Image (cartoon, rainbow over all chains, first blue to last red; front, side):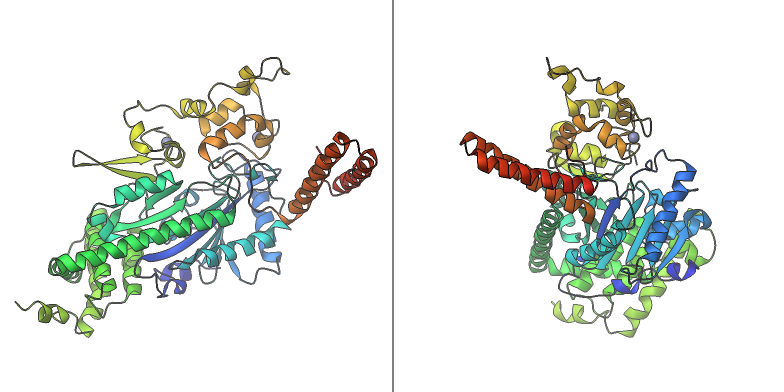
Amino acid sequence: MMIEPFLESATPVWMHVEDDYSDIVISTRIRLARNLDGYRFPLVFSEDEALQVEQAVTHAIQDSSKLLERYSYFAIKDLTPLQRQILVEKHLISPQLAKKELVGSMLLSEDESISIMVNEEDHLRIQCMTASFQLQKAYEQANKIDRALEGALPYAFRDNFGYLTSCPTNIGTGLRASVMMHLPVLTLTGQMNQIINAMTRLGMTVRGIYGEGSENLGNVYQVSNQITLGKTEDDILADIQSVAEKIIQKERQARGKLMDKAELALEDRIYRALGTLTHARILTSEEAATCLSNVRLGVDLKLIDGIKAATLNECIVCMQPGFLQHYAGEALPPSERDRVRAKMLREALFQETLSKPTIGGKGEDSYDV
Amino acid sequence: MICEHCKQRNATVTVTQVQNSQKMEHHYCDVCASQFHPFHAEFKQEPVSIQQLLSNWFGSPTWQQKVGEKQQAPPQQQTCTYCGFTYKRFLKEGKFGCPSCYDTFAEHLPKLFNRIQAGPQHIGKMPGAHSNVYVVKKQIEDIRKRMKDAVDEEQFEEAAKLRDEAKELENQLQFEGGDVS
Ligand SMILES: [Zn+2]
Ligand SMILES: [Zn+2]
């Protein structure tokens, strides 16, 4: 199986959905951590054990008639560093799995909404993604796969501790539910601190989408549960659901207030961002992320029309180093990346902004003083 | 980026704090982050090593508290027969070596899970095969309770009936490979 098709587009088809939540929620992800009894965890296992685990898992997946999806198999060691990086940027594999030289592999469904990581931190990590805010749908998908595999694989499970995992932070249900949200106005108005504090107290975590050290770059946050033991799956999902709903509500209120109080200033900020994206010749990832966030807000608030949210989602993924180099067709030093990033974003957005009467459209008429 | 508290794991949680109108960002790993409720209480403390952190979760080892009960090996000295992990190694890595570690160190874990999780007991879903065993175990537990009540009320005939019921279920469990204890 070739990896190339999976690297071609920044966002898979399943991402291109617009519903009641897509002004704020980008995607939902469910992950189940599972291990096989009788094998040491990947932290310390032998290469031989790794191979046995991998064979057991891949056979179980390929043999299971209950799994309707077809899965493509990739050994991490067979992928180039750039290919791995792109898979990480697309959130199809974790950075940790990308580093596995010998033993890691992944199974990927055709539409990329399901990826099964083998021998990452745990023997098995089932990951299901949906566009927008669909915790239940994503969980049902993951649960179906889990149910199909449990008959064929000797899961490490104890009545008291539940599904056993390498790290005690995943024990019990092994369930991590994450909702990725774009929260520009809560960030702008400084309310995120408060929210993050409150969420931490509720046993939730918040992190950024561009990986370590860039936590709120582009104002995109990932909210996920921290607690995996002592609650049922339904409780965990309900907790995340209600917390995410509250955050969505708060962001919408904040957006409404900002529009009432400072529409012109907001519109100015949004159009400056659009101007930068469509005309700049050098763009650092920080500036690009900020501008994309502003333009996205403009689209969500209907201050800009003609640009699709899907295009922006695509840009958010594409502007990362791995994709840029894939786009350029060569390895690029960091300075060159800024140039290529500007070029890529210009090309992606210029067409859409030119073909529709967006610039000078609503803006000038409504603010004629 | 490394967790600024334990300085060992990757930082995955960012906490933004505003103090005297100054914005400060702190980066913690999952493990440390789940420890801090709320965060700001912890800043002033010196960063501690992960060993200390884990030891702190446990407080004094349970074997010291159980005076008069059967002597247990101190957790530090217990070794998982399957993977060779010692408790000390677990404290160092923050991770277990294999599923059997959970059995080896079972009695020291509830305390840890009370701290970093919502409790020490799994109440979520279980693999199909287990759910059967689990249901039967619950039934046996229930019958034993009723048996005790019957004995207390001197209804010995009823108690004998319940005892036979429990036995039958236990046999069934053993047949299915479940652990009766
Ligand atoms: Zn830490
Ligand atoms: Zn072990």
